[in-house]
Image (cartoon, rainbow, N blue to C red):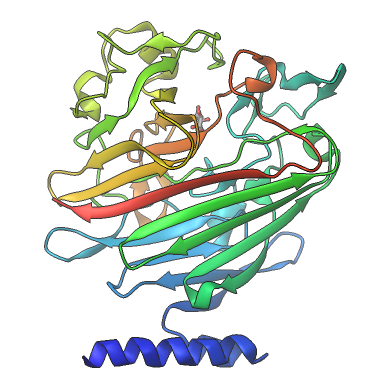
Length: 379
Ligand code: GLA
């Protein structure tokens, strides 16, 4: 009864806080939403760290630098909270360069071959940043942008907006992007992405969180048990560009239609696993229509933590942190190879050059919309 009253009290104060213009008052008055300084970028821009808290004590901390999910604390089967995403304690860690920990990725998630594509007969040249290819939006992708942040939904959500200018990293059209992180009392962290453009362009947005459900820095993720709702995946060439084939997972180490430990087959002498140095592949999600569908379920047996991923997207990159190489992260923990896994919901890599893949073209007057939910529970 008391806690119920407290929540109502906090909600009322939250509303008052929203209408008042003193940021300090807002910080002090809401328990769901708080804000603190996270430091300055190299160009002197002030960035903040926003924390969403739900009624179960789950917290998600997000910075408006790169829209990065900096920490996510969820309970194990004994109710013990642990931070299940990799990252850094300070902005400095992110500024020094990192493998996209927790970041919003855009304008185009994953690779575009030879950093170029043709749209309406015009060839666009992008900034190559992985050999001759473009990866995750280019040299300065959305993961390095300072976003405008706003508390919405009574402190249950953080709305981030960013205007990506016509020609940025070589992409056509001014793209107005909004990304909203919401945390509800069912321990679901939802990310909604929307975008509009003033010229035909390509868009593919995702979040690049590295999860370890045993707690960040607590060893590798090989014992996590994964189920992926996909009959097919997109095999890649030596540069990790999809060949265009949609290959059946049946009889391969990519068959996660029933639960498998990540480590069970990761070192098999399979051509695709060798090319990716492990799993680094786009799965073609089984869908029966539009809307949110369950893409994956991951269980960490020691702690009992479960994460389910639901998405409106047709694909999901399953990446097992194969390129992680002793990075010192939060609390001085050292992240080695395969200490985190990513489930990046997306359209397929290199779609701008693969007309047979679902289209990533956005035209003026249309709205790009994408939603992904990370749902936490225990078993
Ligand atoms: C994605 C890619 C990987 C790797 C990581 C970042 O998941 O598919 O190959 O580049 O991002 O290190």
